Amino acid sequence: MNMNILFMIAELPTPLIYMIIGFAMWKNPPSYKVNAGYKTELSRSSEQAWLYAQTFYGKLSGIVFAVISAVTLAFNIFALVTKLDDTKGLIAFLVWISVVFAALAIVKGTVERRLKAAFGKGGDGNER
Image: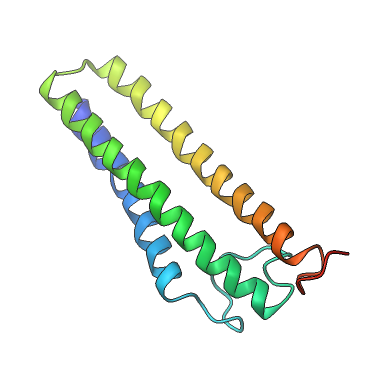
């Protein structure tokens, strides 16, 4: 069996799930009282910070993971058409995992930086 098919099955759902969750959070952010969503100390510091964090995280992660989903699909189609060997497919899979983790870290860092700029350390919109 061609391992690239297994890599495709393993790779594609992850960015699609992050994309769907991101767009859902953007359009319908979780309530401040619900114990779900983008939870950090700064995002939980006030209701305004919470709403800002949920919508910004949702929008940013939705867009980033939509791009990653498209690139993943295109690469997997390329790998199947060109019959990429299993070793190269495994290397591509490991690179892909690194890209997903890096994207998650970049999205989180960007959201936290924007929260600090908008709400300061206290979360109330005033720099402390």
